[in-house]
Length: 540
Image 1 (cartoon, one colour):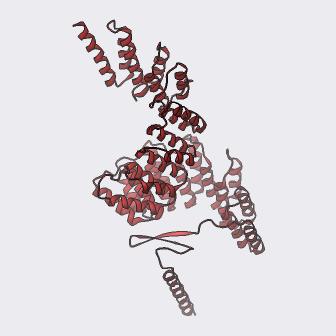
Image 2 (spheres, one colour; image 1 turned 120 degrees about the vertical axis):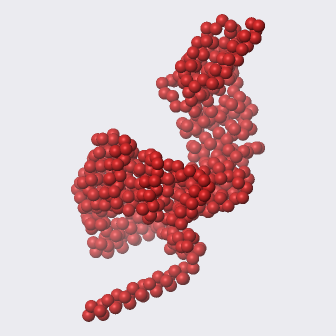
Image 3 (cartoon, rainbow, N blue to C red; image 1 turned 135 degrees about the vertical axis):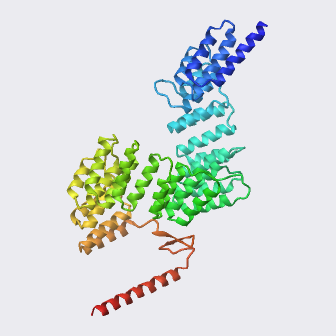
């Protein structure tokens, strides 16, 4: 009977630990473990380690409390060490000198060997610190303890190497894996995308036989961010045309695809995606609605953007910022300012991106004083320290209004070193108002900042040409030839015709017969000349 009651008590404590949702209750359980005379020292140790695990891992736990338990344990086993290593690798907690690595070293000093659950979180800790050398040292222990063929550890090592920019080394680990899972492929694809190797990522994606939604989303998002929105759209269409039903788009997919439509100005595709979401019975949540606002704005459909924004039952700061940015893009400065005041009335605090949109709106609408007030409000009311982008917007506002002395003073008073965006904003104003002397000085400064950027030389030529200094134009062009400075990629534009996207550049187009396009342009040019001639004849 006593034995039965003892087992019931032990089982009850374990059950309560698993169900515990607060530290207050957990401390009560801890007190019961410490004071109950029915527990032997062995059982008390066992239950304390389980309690420590809960404190360390659970969202309702407390890492400081788990650390105190660890310090006061007479002895620690591998289970306890792994729990703490995992906790310190996955949770942010300041105030302790411990970390995953120091705990691991302490474990080795106490004669406890690691297992396959130890190393993934130590490698994760190294990834968080971008410490590839320490990661390599840890991996040497992986080899030493005969765990180098564990797929989970190898995946973590690939992730570490990719995070630190060692894509070639990551590829070598991947190639040497005897067994790969979907995480292995995803890690290499995401790593390739983060390191700018979009084509390599796409090649690996095509080689995969089993793709998860995470794989599709990573690839589509990476293509959009890598400057290949058209390929991203094509990949999305391939995804929805699959008949196996194994993978269905989610809100992350739609947000990325709408971003691709925004980049291309492909309104028909954007509308189709919106209809697809509705037909699929999926909810248009805040993330998707915000992406729709951005897409409509960049495609020139301001009314649709407003309709989407006003139709949102709940809006976060990102949604308000997206709508403000739409107004800024189209020069609706007053509307952007009104939306900022409305946002404040809803007790929402704008962030630094919101103020980039507001200041940009003031610049495009020529609202100099309003721009000043917002720049001041940012720090005085919202305690947001201006960054270089805010200064660039403010310089743009002043330069467009030909207030060059004020713009120069603002640059001189900057807390950080002005970058090309700041000087570029000043240069734009100089070109608009034909301020040759200052424009020349700024253009030369920009060339010193980035001597291989062709745009700065072109801007300087433009300033000289507007001032009639054609000898100086020739000198700059000669300098460009001597340095081998030219435009890396030809200018291009995307045009959507009957729902089909066409790309046209200086080099031509794969999809359009350029002779037909040039023929149409020549006919339009001739028609315009005829119209101009008729107007002159009529006036005479």
